[in-house]
Length: 249
Image (cartoon, rainbow, N blue to C red):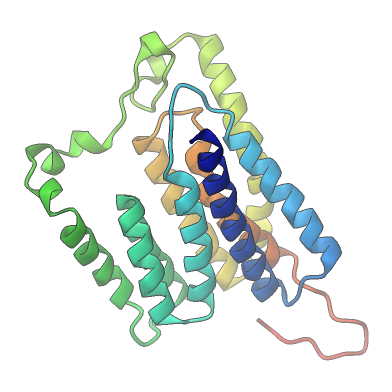
């Protein structure tokens, strides 16, 4: 059963990588074998980094990473029907899959039907998880904030002042290892309208992670990998040979 689970994760991650590569190709204006190989190394290295978490088992994050990559690609291609299909898969996987609708709306703001995925996501969530809406805890805002457990070494934004400095420093170091490359991309990515939208989408997920997950638990950050790769593609597009006309994307 364990090997079947590994095979499942491997296939899901492969799907996520394929769509991430398609996003990079679309945004950058092309991708060759050398760049594809480098992209594979970077993506799988980031996945290895976020997979170092322990004591917590998560079988939904890699599916959501692949869903985000596919949703981002089809949103860039403005294929609304494909986005709705991906949205259904995302919501069936986990409640946060409704954010796929926000990705489409942000990228295609004011385009015809940009609001449809935003409405369709909550309707799917209601239809699939009707029993959750009947629970009192569903309507309690505190249910969506992870407070952590000091005895287990879990840290959350709600108990930062109550944990040892050594544990807090180690957690900050893990967060820095993931976000340092991202911080280098943001200033260059926001210079374009599309890059600014990708930064906004990434920020949306970061806010969710800050309150909904334990600090230092990097596995949910795998969801950001396709978005960050898209930011890189916007920041460093293909430079046309000298003497040829460039196409603004």
